[in-house]
Image 1 (tube, rainbow, N blue to C red):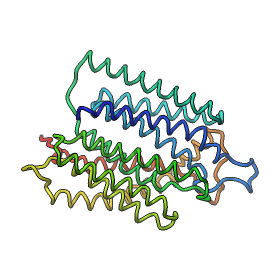
Image 2 (image 1 turned 45 degrees about the vertical axis):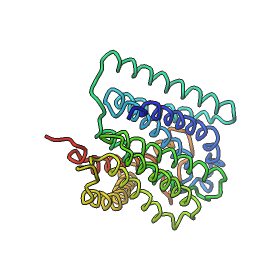
Image 3 (image 1 turned 180 degrees about the horizontal axis):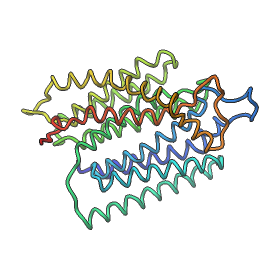
Image 4 (image 1 turned 60 degrees about the vertical axis):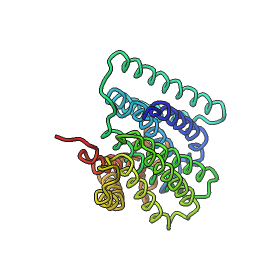
Length: 327
């Protein structure tokens, strides 16, 4: 897909803006009132952190899309994402607020993104590599699809913050665009049928994100599962080969079943493992200098859970034979 580079960089820049707003506008809403034990925050207190970390993953996915999945772009993009998380924790300790810091962080983030893209483009020109890596792009689309479920269902302790729904909706729409963009870039050819399918999938997914944000947190689970199943099944329809010029419906039916069941199982397994074995959410809370979650609740980093579950779905759905890879 010729437009993969500008689209990927544009989506990465949008993610940088979302990250900056999350740091200076949303994060102050979640800061603790005081250090007293009876006022320690509870479940979902640091929902703004999940918005920011999801935006950082979106920056990485946008760079992967811009590089058409090639390792020359994907490797440095992942490294940049790790450094960005470290910078996020450091900035969080400083508690920036207001319009000035928002503009400064957005401009600085876009400058870093532009410099990284320029270096990667120069390296690519000086040492041309292979073509599109369809396997990596399909995996990136799966990660974005699972993260769409997580971002769309973001909750807070009260769910009454006026900024919560717009932030979750914007994050979900950004991830929908990355899902469809990466899947379409992974297609063997950008035919009219695939473009129409991508447009329909985008309209349905964005409508689903908006609908889910109007539903109270409890009954949200089933619509979230349906959204994830539609997105991930759509990824296979866009990215996989079409033998004879049309989809192999039996394969896609199996993929639809995996898209319906797989994300739930993976999300639960990863969440339980993090809560019981590796309390990484509490570690990030401590590093950022924020008050710990009270002992009766759990400090869960949903964005990381969604990332790991998305990687698992990528291994399931980026099936080499379906993408035209042969031994």
